[in-house]
Structures are given as structure tokens and as C-alpha cells.
Image (cartoon, rainbow, N blue to C red; front, side):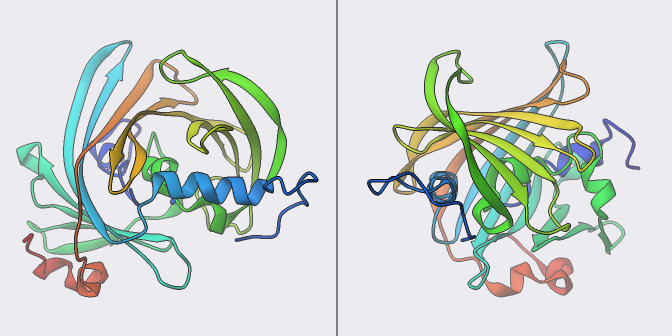
Length: 266
């Protein structure tokens, strides 16, 4: 069920929506600390009120499309931690329509209405293939990682345009997060995330992400497309596109595992 490239790996990619620790002292003259830069970057990706959007995932192997999926995502931040909790409804393809996934904290549940069973996904299952790509896109990184400024670099963004960036080195505060460490490049002019590299505890590169196509959505310029490249096979690329952004109420009941069998989209 969880072999590399399986449909389960694909449908786990858009979870967690749409990501204040102690930091090293920043430079003099009131310059922001690394932790403050990271928090500002989180705010670019993450709206500050409950919302929904549609996510379309297109997978490519060696430049050829090999699969696609459309998901409806309902997201709400937890009041105490600031981490997003997400309910994901499968829209297409038809064989997966109305399946659900729920991510709350570090717990991830899959619900299939045909079997009426809720299955908890283990951390190992979430790491297979390009699973947990939602953590790449929308996790509240400043809550789970301690940031250090690793330098200033000029790098090519996802559209091959050069950007002057802060390079941050992120170290996980707990063993419960998906990635042990992250390298993140943030545009020094506007705090937009440009590129990220995500590593396992053993130091293996799991994936590289490019955040691009910024548009005004829900009160801020946000990335509406993320390109994710597999760390082991660079010919395996997933493009995640976001549309139909809207503020909306997300009832607490929707974010409970026991409610999954009763969920009906409004």
C-alpha cells in the first residue's frame, strides 16, 4: 500500500496548511534575528485566519506527466501552538473522490468512506516517496525549528531569476517533526520563501522545494505554486498549484478523527 510512487504517497502531499523559539542574537542596529526572519516567512505562506483552497498536484517523471490529483483543503491554526490543522477532501480522480485525510499536530489520519475505516499513518509511512509534501509547503516552521543565519547568498529562484536571500539553517526542536533539519533561502527584500532543502536525521536530502508564482491571496502576496524535486531521483517532480483561496469558518468538529465518517462538504 505504501510502496514508493503509490497513490497513497501522492495523496499525502498536500497536507497541513496551506506551516517562537530562542534564536541567536541578531546583528546590531535592530536587524531581525534568524528566528524573526523565519517567522516572517511563515506568515507569507500561512494566512492568519481559517481558510480553504483547492490544491492540484501534477506529478512528472523524466519530464512526462504521470499522474494528477485535485484536493479541497480546509485549514485552521491551533490557538496554542499556531500549527495548522487540516482536513483534506479528495475531489479527483473519481476513484478517490470523497476520501479524507486529517492532520492535527503530528497525527495524520486517512479515512476511506467505502470501508468506513480511519487509519493512522506512521512517521515512516509519511516519509515514503514524496509524502509529507504538505510540511514542505505550509508548516509553521518557527514553532518546530530553531533558526540560525548561515549567510547571505544570491540564488536562482524557481523561475531562474536571481534573488538576494538570507540562508537559514533550521534544527528540529523535537523528534516528532518530519524533517530533522532544513536549509531555507528567504528573499531578503520581502521575506518570501524562495527555496528549501529538507533532510532526514541521517543527513540524506529528501526533497528540494521552490516556492513561486506569487499572487495577492487572502490579504498578502503568497506563493500559488510549489515545485518539489525528489532528493533521491531528481527526475521525479511534483508541481502543486493552489487556487480558489477563501476565508471560511472551519468548525472544530471537522478537525476531530471521530467526525470523519459524518463529514459532508458545505
